[in-house]
Image (cartoon, helix red, strand yellow):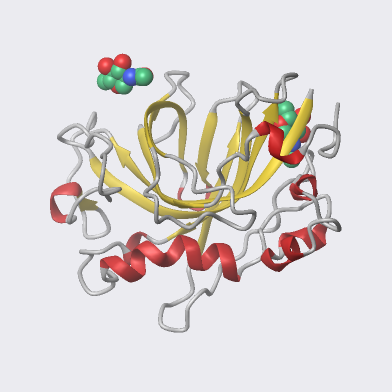
Length: 260
Ligand SMILES: *[C@@H]1O[C@H](CO)[C@@H](O)[C@H](O)[C@H]1NC(C)=O
Ligand SMILES: *[C@@H]1O[C@H](CO)[C@@H](O)[C@H](O)[C@H]1NC(C)=O
């Protein structure tokens, strides 16, 4: 099997907590009702969370998607996994009193992050972490974006992406677990979501196509996997994506991507 690694699924995601235990919203929790709305692609929308859910966190993710091409050149790439560092942008969400950004700068965060920061992963080829390296595609083919499988994550670090907004705090990691379930581990706040895909819509046509120009990965509604490993979260939206889509299998040519 040929493994192809494409970089930089960059996304924000909203995670929500079920009101299984009746919980009184505090000042640090904003309910969906007080938010303008779930972001819209303009042509399709993910369905809203069920009533009674409370928004817990809005995260900005930065990392890579891992796809493979089956034997046939023309097959659709299959997703094998993903790795990303997550940062807390809850206080920047439009509509948040005092600290919320306007919608336009908020929606630009993922693209700005993608093009202004190195990929925060322990890549096999560390030089490939910088977005500018794709201007030398022969030196850094896509497979360069592969991460160290034993220790993919760098030490936790906050980020500064715009002079006009304060430091954005490290929140946790996104990865696929040993059962290949997408996992959002919000380490710094003790929340975790183990999820499966429930709905998928195409990113807007105008979304940033990413560093290798493959397109913005789909927006998703992801629901609890039912394995009993989530903690405090049961719903995740992956929205406002930049980059991260797979290239068609044929595009990179089998053989150049590292094989097992
Ligand atoms: C991509 O997924 C395959 C299959 O799970 C795995 O063997 C490989 O190490 C992954 N690559 C990266 C960079 O995570
Ligand atoms: C999505 O969730 C709804 C509501 O729980 C369910 O009826 C539907 O089957 C799910 N769809 C998929 C593709 O998992």
